Image (cartoon, rainbow, N blue to C red; front, side):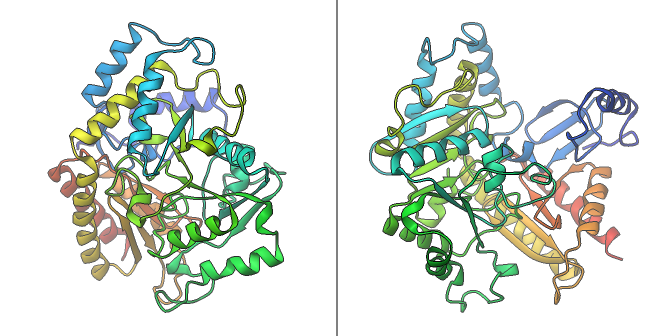
Amino acid sequence: MTVKTELPGPKSQELLERKNKFTARGISQGTPLFIDKAEGALMTDVDGNTFIDFYGGIGVLNAGHCPKPVVEAIKNQAEKLIHSCFMTTMYEGWVDLAEKLAEITPISGDKKVTYVNSGAEAVENAVKIARSYTKRSGVISFELAFHGRTNLTMGLTSKVKPYKYGFGPFAPELYKIPSAYCYRCYYRSSYPGCGMHCLEQFDRFFAAETPPDSIAAMIIEPVQGEGGFIVPPKEFLPGLKAITEKHGIVLIMDEIQTGFGRTGKMFATEQFGVEPDLMTMAKSIAAGMPLSAVVGKAEIMDAPGPGMLGGTFAGNPLACAAGLATIDYIEKEKLPERAGEIGAKVVDRLRAMQEKYALIGDIRSLGAMIGIELVKDRATKEPANEETNQIIKECLSQGLIIISAGVFGNVIRMLMPLVITDDQLEQALSILDNAFAKIQK
């Protein structure tokens, strides 16, 4: 990485002024940079500064920036067909990708697929499908969840500011349950001697809030992303599966951020030995092309009749071509295995840093999905959100782009492309170490 100008540089500053003039104020940025080109795990801005990428397009670039086979697939497809709308005239790429997704999804039996454009749309459609199948309307989600920015998905999302504030009212019959956030347990218990209150709570919930026969679906991220990279105890997801099976509730795994190799498996649910009924996927599905999917048991997926699912751009030919090439690249390069290697190396370094820096309260990881929760005091666990922002800013000045997460804004999250080299990884961790040393005085 090379930072040779002040940030933002003069070209980025000029573009920033134009952006502020013509772009809605609600579109904010974590950095003042305008990127010109990127490859692998490196990004170069319009002023010639090069950065190591530790946020990967917020989980979109597991296969890295501009992987050559994906670029080639997009070029080849663009020369033949850019758009037709599959709902009127069909094309083979749609079917090829659906077949591949059904093959790799960890759900037994016959599976079917539908596409839309974004993660939020995938969640919306999964809920539609579950409601159609069960003939019920209620949906359970979890505190600290993030499922999107549409009206329904904002209702399912937990973090109020900035995602939900002032945008209500939200869709009805959406219910929140405390999640398994062991570092800040809702029940002030300690794992593993807690008795899993986060599972026991459902008996009271079904008695006090709504009966289980009114619930169509339960949706959860196997690792909560925006909520703070919260990895649940090994009993939690299997426990949820047992509850949904008992009551005929459709279990939806939101694998939008955790999917396609990030956690050391193709999908995070495989790490917990749980088979969902439906899965939502997006982000790294197509290396940056806008595409999302719902994959699930054929019986459930077929509940909506013809014309009840779809969208003008859903499963666009370019996106399908990119999706096929991306999955092939992930498999050939063994990126899930690489995620495990990256995670082990990073966590080892972070444990050593935790010994030096009292700011580091908790380290959470599953594969290369890694979060560091910062606190002002390890006893009180008061969130250190100001220090988190300072460390992120210091990293940027040294050539590392990294971002935050968590309902308190005090978690540094890592989503580096899985093609990052060992040298780049080492440079990035040294920058992070230096940033902690400078901020914690």
